[in-house]
Image 1 (cartoon, rainbow, N blue to C red):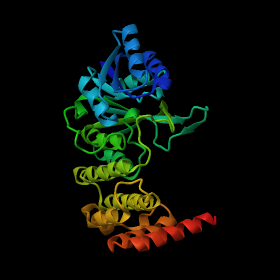
Image 2 (spheres, rainbow, N blue to C red):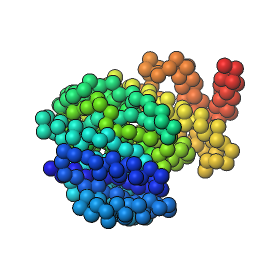
Image 3 (cartoon, rainbow, N blue to C red):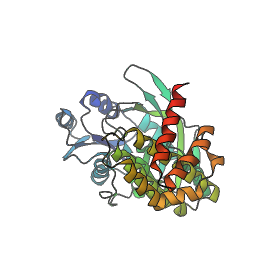
Image 4 (cartoon, helix red, strand yellow):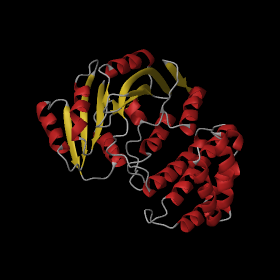
Length: 345
């Protein structure tokens, strides 16, 4: 049983040693470390080559032009030789006994996917736990996978590919993601959809085995117009899985309600940034949204009983009504009033 650690690399020379060394010390099974350099402009590429020379039987390097995290990870899947894939971001690191724990679960339970918990950390030494509250050694098969689907549809807590060991057979290795409109944002949320679908058995480990560097992801975009477009694409792709997974009508309503709230936040952001920092005017964006099938479906399915906060229960219907009427003046007045009220707190 061979494991492939797949590590996309882009301008993370400051953290790369810690990441790679946390992988080199793994025990419990044979493994390779596949470093996929996404056109780094710092010394990251040279560092990758140095590790390959020092550990030629373990470390392989692929140099490619810059395409973003999604296609870089996909390249890693294609080139990996392992029976199992484990994704690691190059500014993070893993527990010394990650592989040992994963192998023990595989030997005992024969799953197609092992999920494990994670912990956030910052450069100044602060740590914080994930929001996941799942019992250790929970097993999901057949209808029990509905719980995993619920986590995916209503939270971001199980999206990360870096907190999963996945069997090669369930990975859509040859799927073409080149035209999906996503580079560095929401890429994991899209890729986990077929993995959850294809996995007949999923086992969860509650121990944090992955350490995620908070606020330092070099390959991740900050909030921009492109990142919002990636969120929209992710919604449209995820929506198809409501039927694939045969989820309940209640879960569908909760899914659409959550995404209506996300859309409301996007519209609020548009008006905050309507100073030339986005490629379209607020009027154009509101018109496009109001005519979209996604907006109509969200409005149709929205149920304020499932709003995440009392304020959203109040504000989202107002925002949606103004969008439906293409009333940008009304939206401006509402957001201005909202801003004044918040400043009084």
